[in-house]
Image (cartoon, rainbow, N blue to C red):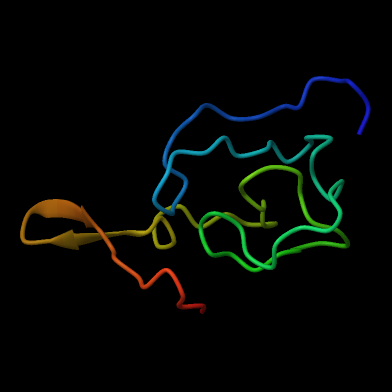
Length: 89
């Protein structure tokens, strides 16, 4: 990856247990990684393209923020959905 602007989103909850910075669709970090973990911070399978993305999160071609954000609506409150750290989808 060249020393250009990484084109990352703001630090926010994109799913998972920690805030992350989602790469923009035109980010040079997309498909620029090598030797990455098999799942990103949100437990999304890597890679989603020909190579993994650089950083904590793997950008998918269509991000479903409503239903894949690791939160569920329960009794009037939005609570984190808990998963075992060893579980995989």
